[in-house]
Image 1 (cartoon, rainbow, N blue to C red):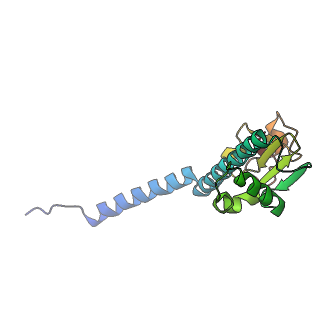
Image 2 (cartoon, helix red, strand yellow):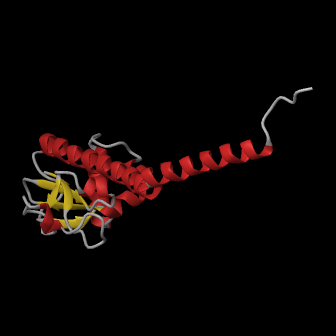
Image 3 (spheres, rainbow, N blue to C red):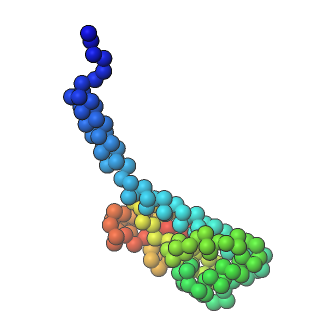
Length: 164
């Protein structure tokens, strides 16, 4: 009489091989980097939406929501009032600030009476290596040499991803 099936040793070998493959896959994908990349993607989309709405507001009203030059974090109460003005013109959804949530604290607006730059500092290595991440912390200068930004894998990285 023949027994059909696998022996305990064969099953253990297969489980060990699957475990080794899973460890290799996790190391290759770096789940923490993937989380940072997902966060950066969300912030980038919020930056683009905010920038576009300000440009449309300017096209409708022929002025920016602010009257002076600004450099403010988007979660600042003053910026929130500007966002409410933009919402009142219909250029942003009424629940924009709730949907954006903590992302507003990562976004900086630099504006004059005729222009707007909206920036954020990426957390993921993928976004830090993106060619659009080239603005220095003064928000106006760009760098053609990525080494001026610092090492993309370290917290000392200083360049910003901006929409002008």
